[in-house]
Image (spheres, rainbow, N blue to C red):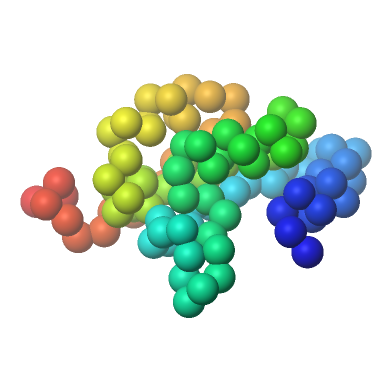
Length: 101
């Protein structure tokens, strides 16, 4: 089952029941792990997922600072995503990195 099929089946029920679905970025934010494609690796990937969800307010994101920092996109992505209506949570668990020292 792919994401589009899954969201097409689950999102209408989530909307009906008032359940919010939150997408966590891949950790680490790479395009594949062991040959298996990863879904959420960038702003573009989130935008595509939200488009597949038809802009539903019940489909959102977890803006995981650690994952975005690992991908080198924390500062670029933070203002855009955190100010969007899709941002549901913002955990601040950070990986060990130069920026944290």
